[in-house]
Amino acid sequence: MRPNVLLVVLDTARRDAVEPYAQAGHTPALADLARRGRALEHAYATSSWTLPSHASMFTGLLPRQLGLGQPPDGTAHAVRPVLERFSERFITSTLQRAGYATRGFSTNLWVSDVTGFDRGFDDFRYGNSGRDERMNALLGQGRRALLAWAREGLQSRSDDGAAEVGRALRDSIASWSGQPTFWFVNLSECHSPYLPPRPWNDLPPWDRARAALDNKAHLSFHSICMYIAGRHEIPRSALHRMRHLYDRAIAYMDSWLAGVLEALDARGILDDTLVIVTSDHGENFGENGLIAHGFSLDERLIHVPAVLAGPGADIPGELFSLAGLPRMIADAAGIDPHPWGEDEFPEGAVISQFDSMAAADSERARQGAAEHNLSAEGLDRLCARFTIATNGRHKLVVRNERELFFDLVSDPLEEAPVDLTQDTDAVNGAVATLRAALEHPAATQLGAPAPEPTSAAPVASAEELAEIERKMQLLGYM
Picture (tube, rainbow, N blue to C red):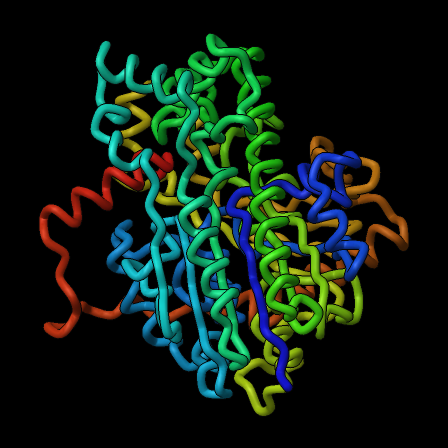
């Protein structure tokens, strides 16, 4: 019988925040899962933010192959017709054709029915939380908004949808019919704002309120951009509170996972289920002048956790791209043929890509630089385009058109590029291999321009668009 598959994406979870990559005792459920299976040492996301990374996980293609380095027109609704072109490559569609039941649960707008990620699911639910009901006050300005944020932090009663999704997923497991099933979950608890519910939020009352105000002051899209451009400061104490509550949100997710694994065990199907826990990208907390995610392909953002257990978890090697998930799942399910070939990616290296929201010489960027008095260096930091190839030890970064080469063992923070004029076999050999990887068709192929909307395409109402905009603002995307 074909195995069940449970794919859990802990949105924004850093590799160094979970076991077995981090301190013992912090995430016991993940540690136990790794002991039953394995934790991949070198797993890499294909980008540093949610949309392109998930698109790769579902289709097995890199962001630029999909034409989704950034969303067309910058809108969530415009993603759906792009993904429609790749419907036959969706892992969910492939599993459906093989007789799988498919159930999806997400708490992130970018991975929802709005963007087209419900494709191939028998049932897909975009989760809500009590926090959404207070968005207008949270996103406003002035004294009312400050009080709303402080109250949100002080009370720390609601999460970002994990509790609701957990109940629905456990119900689905309990009522499992015997049909092989694929469950997908995206959880946004580790994403800003970092406000886990009590008891995971273990700060004293005043510090809980201050932590919420930290989020309002420093993690809006505008504040993130200004920090990266060198025009905004975040106090060390605020960064400390952010990282503390981020780690506590990770602990909450571990407890959530423990409940789901217990549900699988109680139903008697844990050993028959391939469990995959990973992240679409990580998070920065001031390293190299970076905060949140995007704007870079540094190791904190793309070197992600990947813990596997169950049938099909014993994949060869330690170097793994999340774009390989569809093939790995199809192989574990015994599906043949499937859309993913063996030579679709370069050997011995993985590729990640990040496209900026605007080129530095665009009118939009020039207007923003003038409005906010940005230096040329600050504007360049906001508008840089990245492509990287790494083998886990060495990393070749193409930042705009400039090559930077790093030894990740001696320089894990990527602070000092290696001089490429050094005449050493190790450097020259690694550079040649990684350059060849960046010339592979998967890395150079560009997707077609976004299709024009058709008359049959669903049109969002003004109210729906306003609600989507509010949710994107709360997540720091606008």
